[in-house]
Image 1 (cartoon, one colour):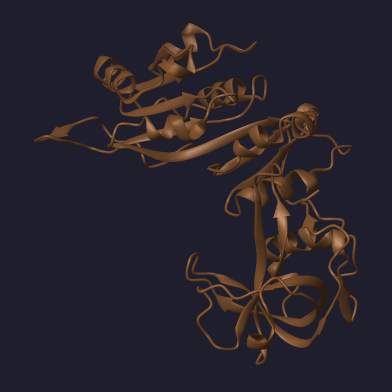
Image 2: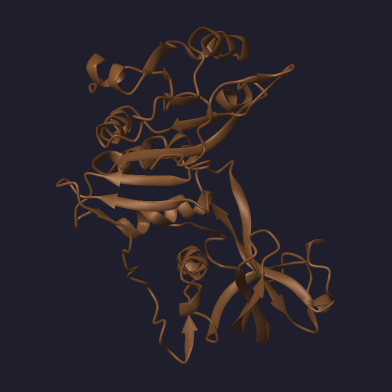
Length: 330
């Protein structure tokens, strides 16, 4: 259920308004946002007596009929131009409707950050859901990669609908994970069946005595290690990497080994890496290319409170740079 337990009645105590839960639907036109909302309405999830301010930012082929809107107490307000989005407009909508929650069906061509920055102070982002049309996803990646991947940055749930066995589901998931490690990914078939456990066909032998990761496969290895950590725990891996000594790794025997990765465009390149235990790490210069052979162990992440991978070096040797210094996730 969307936002179960998060809705609350709109009240004012003194001059402080109670938090207003906001459910944001991101994604491109015809990606399935309206269908997802309508299906949720048909399941009765909004028949709780609470008024919903439904802000629509684009007109698609699908519409929600008035009977459904009235039954679920949805009051529609439309924004037709991105330049019209501002805090005053959103406050005016709220003052007109007096809702207990807000649902925003965004326009995939608009800047999500601008929308979030326009929220009144007491509006709280409760959940971000991103339906994606699997039949057009790769086309968007090819032609508008930054706009496409930006849809995933805040997503709690990404649903690839109209998804068949012919689609590269593992790649779809990697593209989400490249920009958002916490987002859940689901696949919905054209018949409406939902799947979430899609095995990855890895380009290396994960059961080998030493898992050898080729240069071009580091992005796949990096994402899969975090997604399926138990499959790697206690195993030995070998890969080409660059060295870094970030200030966040405070222990004297820790440094970072990883690669520069492109998630959406040439302007968005970041260093993705594993912490690595190595007593002689101080002898290795930043950006030096090295061949790493290490055992995968676990440590508690201070960010998530869950086990995360940390490498214990078995052997580290200097190496030539990779032919392509940038890695990708597809």
